[in-house]
Length: 90
Image (cartoon, rainbow, N blue to C red; front, side, top):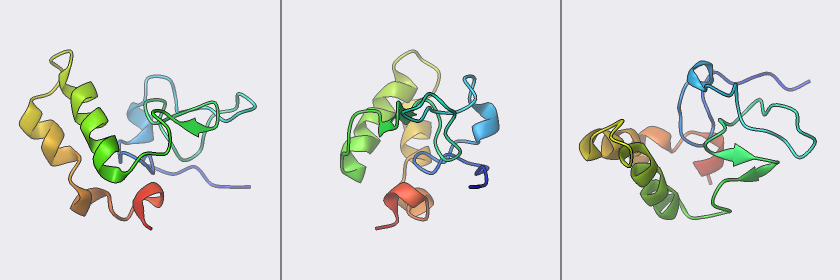
């Protein structure tokens, strides 16, 4: 059995902070790797995009409703911090 990760392997957010308890697999079960903002029904939200495309979507999502400043969103999505996550390792 696969162990649950501490952080989303796409965006790095602590999975314990995900209000929905994680993303979902195709069978409806909770993902052990990804948050609900990144992963739904066994697929990445927004499709298989490049890191830069994903980053643009993430920054927009984090700043759209005023939850975070553009600078903080930029800081949290820098590749140097996310490059070791499973989704972006290659």
